[in-house]
Image (cartoon, rainbow, N blue to C red; front, side, top):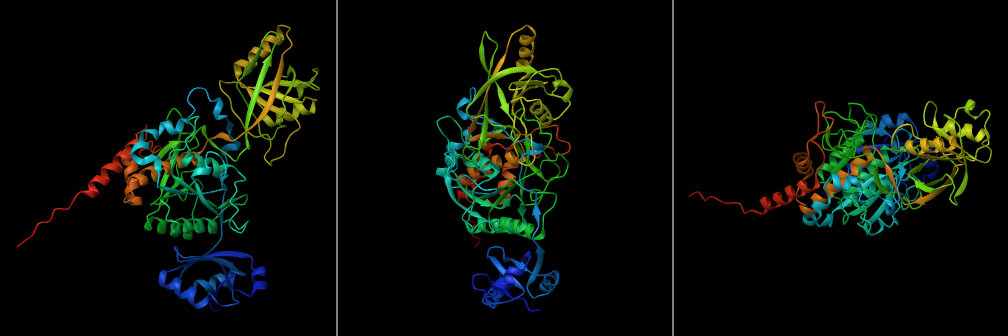
Length: 540
């Protein structure tokens, strides 16, 4: 078989393309082999390999073949380094079914700036780094809401590499990519909401769809980042392995001067996921607000740094965040209480008020002998799933269920795994609120709850996905300060200036918490050193 690399746009063998069912990545040995392949075969009108994309900065082709035999034959062609089938990594998603705790920025008690921005000392670095002005960050993720008010003025351009559009539709249908982008470079607004580098520019490469993140999309995204001469590629994605083509692309990005930052992973194991585990990548783990490692954060020898990754406030596609508003009326007082809502439950945008009826833990037997029809069931967290509590309440005729926590604080989750919606509203209130309601009812009072769902543009998410953009933002601040620093120098600088955390016997924290202020100061100092004249000694 003769290797024939033909452009789809120039190919007249469209019937063959339609029959091809395997996408492959072909990496050539060097630039010369790549250019020879392009010039020799790009005008062929029919062949066994149909080129979809020429990745000039990676010496790589992405295209389709019809059989495994074609792949094996292609591997034997002169100049070919490797041929691999397209594979998919899991799509970025909130961990353990946690879909975010919605927050309205305007309602934040006290500080309106996300806690992570302060924890990494970003504001202290803004003066010397000009808030990241001049730096450009490519986020490879699920897409972006480019018109979000926190993003719009910093957004530069985007591309879709999933093959689900002509390339210009990179809208975020998941929310993950928008959230990550906001942490990197959301504009500082009048409420104090901001990203780490509020004057850096954002680019988005949509490489993840509902099917996952394909290896071909990832290498295309990295190639695009190199072509755009971005300062950093932020990848809040990954898995237990990486493909040879992905490793080659990351290595070439590093050689081109592009810093790559990636998430360590969310299964809590002592093994850093890929691409974070690759030697040139800055691997990022997650800590909570008390600067203790998040239980889900993966760690190991390759972990470079940690950053805020629990209850991280950032933007999501407009109107997709969900806030909860709950008021409790016992006949003597009407008080608004802290609350969260559950995705997959009936939403009450217009608000409604009904009587609360205690129903134990929300088990089927707890509804026997009580009348909850057209009312709200009040149940305690514990023993059975939130979804089962809601389903049992609905089966008994309740319009909604108010779950009170069995420990201090609030949590939020999803009642369904497939995106469907149960016919009952579901909200959570704090433990003390639930206990007081029970006491009032036992004292003979009629207690009512007013529930309302509010669409918002902001949400809190947990995950190493949320920690990663903090570090990417700090890289943007460093690059804005000193463009001459290489990726390896920046990685070393960030580790050297990080705030040590521990105990750290198994490298659970890497070098520690990324510190924007110290990193930028170090970048300024390195710039001064670079500017010093070199003294020459003349030997006669």
